[in-house]
Length: 105
Image (cartoon, rainbow, N blue to C red):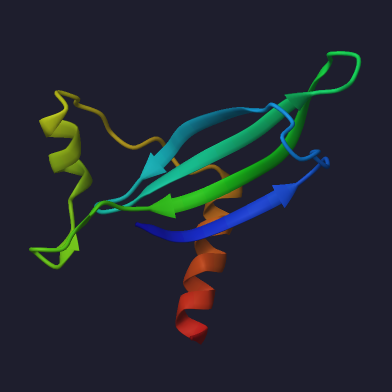
């Protein structure tokens, strides 16, 4: 379930223009993950160009338990052992803005 998102559009895309989506996990907390999506295409001369960049905070929600699935469980069930990378200033600003909006509601 997506909890928050911020998108920065950089270049216009034409309808049906081919594009490439790159997704990276930047960090995570106990129940949520922060991902970065890059939407890229090519200019008319074939040069690569970034059309948009998005930061998304999301979590896997268990409707039966009425709670988010812990990230540790998701990692364990996929045979992974990892610690979350430290959040960059960009991610920290995104998370602080999301918290401020949540408190204002």
